[in-house]
Length: 399
Image (cartoon, rainbow, N blue to C red; front, side, top):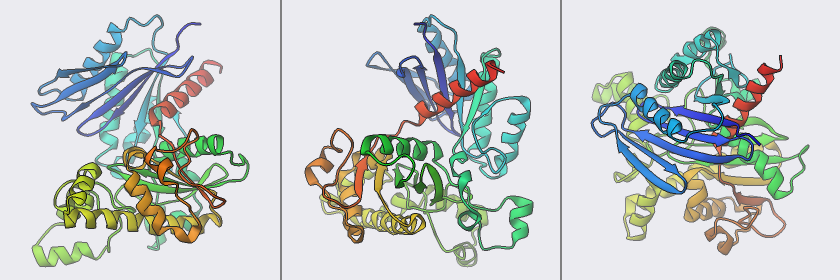
């Protein structure tokens, strides 16, 4: 059977990630990332045939980095040309409720959403434009972080502010990490034996960015992130929920501008701000084990806020069949999972310590007994993007 290669690009403001899949069997032939774009320390790292490779790219921006990725793809000597290229796009606003084939019209629509995600969408657009120049004849697809959450009802997505702000400026809750939440919910139904037609799942995507989502019968009905990825849970460097009055208070006390406060909430808060040590949960766990009080306090705040938000999401669902942990922290930090589940004892979770340390049994379960299931399911956002890309390419070719 001929290979069906699909390339996935996640173009960020200062880094980019990429994966190349053979869609005939789902094999990820190539994966990697470029970090510290536009600096002298920019570096390309990729994994091929089980081996790690690196290449310095001093001073390279998106164009040079993606050209370097293209060089590696060419060296693979693919038997078949690329079937499609899928791009992660952070914000689709209310314009995009599903993945779309990229055209001049859809690209302008993505650019129009940049005011909702000024740190993300312009970088996403730049990645698309570079890949269009490199592969002008290959179909390209945009997959949106926000699309999965377009099923939220107004009671869940409206802010209690003047309705004119929603009607005229799109001020509402959108939610993010949708590709990850959708994937792990689908996997949870399969792996945990849940009813495909009737299930209530909470997915907790925990990494440097964190969000949790309530999923009822395959649809997102509530989520923790809002108009921007700043709302919700405590994250690596982001504060999550804060009193909006903080902006005025810091302006009066310190003379800070709105931009100054927003930058602080995005870059210097969260785990980093609380611990004054690191935004990396592994570093904080090691420090807490050595008696670092602020590291332990940061962990406790992180877990408390997560447990409280999960409780709220459970109220949105009405019942809870399964809680799924995913993302770098969710998949690897057994201490965080144990801490959170202990705080959620009201739901009847019974943690199996051995399974938790082992990151779950063959199905991902870390709980025992008759209560709701707690599980660990690794996310595969890039694979979801590749699948959507192939679906749209095939749909368009059949029209």
